[in-house]
Amino acid sequence: MRLYSAPLLTATLAHLTIALPQVHVQNVVTGASSGCGKTQWPTDFTHYRLGLKSSGKDRSYSYHIPANYDKNKPYPVVVGFYGSSSIGLFFELDTKMSQTRYSADKIMVYPNGLDGSWAGPTYHTSSTVQEDIQFVADLIADVKASVCVDENKVFAAGMSNGGGFIGTLACDPLGSTLFKAYASHSGAFYSDVNGPDNNCNPSPDALPIPILEIHGGNDSTVHYEGGQGEGGPEPAISEWLEWWAERNSCEGKTEESLFDGEVQHLSWKCGDVEGGLQHYMVVSMGHCWADTEINLSQLSVLQGPTVVRASEIITKFFDGI
Image (tube, rainbow, N blue to C red; front, top):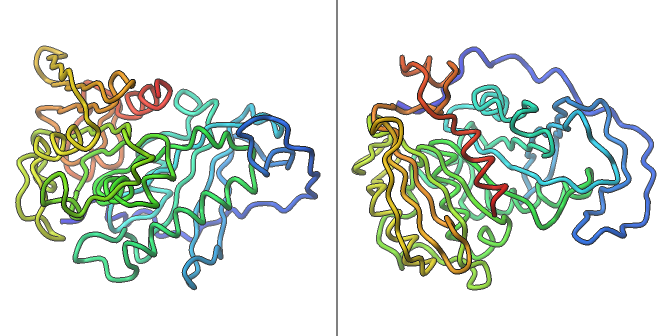
């Protein structure tokens, strides 16, 4: 079963970005993108960008402008990658990451993969890994040219197939340079299964790469212990974490049990970054987005609310990097 088949989300995207006259101002803030000074309206709203050409293909994404948007203030950006058989809108609704409590001071971006998934698993044939990574690079450049972005604070998060793609990005010479930190939820790491040195070649300049992974101990789709998945073999999460600890030259691993043992938290210091590699295992959770409130992915696997909120954990992780 692929997570995030979304039969309720077949409606055509109804809202397109309203084109307004753009006024360019001199970019004087360090790390501010060329999109600073350009008006975005309405705010507290998700805009849609269609027809972005990348590797000769038409690609699309949506982006949410916070309610307090100031066109001259650079904002952090979080790019969210959904699971297979889905669209960016589902990830936005499921994670609630466009809500003010999580992104009052951030611009959220939701890319759309081709045919509803991201390259890496065998079931994805519409694009190659390099084409999808290039799309992400093109998307980031497009966002920076359109809105006021803090170029030093661009982050990536993903779920399931999208969570696996987070690992693909971090292991790529180009992909590893696109984001300051990476967060994967229930990651299906099809492209990273052969140990710390195989199929993983991040840019040396990017290391150590801050990474967070959240996973359900009762995940029956992307098994915590690894094994054969729908799109190929997957590593055990414990092994995948140790590989990244080695890649990042992490040390000082700590373990803590939270919520009466329901959540196991692991943390490493990587270089000068305390908690540069972190992991939360929610023991009884299945293949869904962790949230104390019911969400769409929980309903899809008949799972109730959890004791932690992944969106809160991810937001705090990014804010601390």
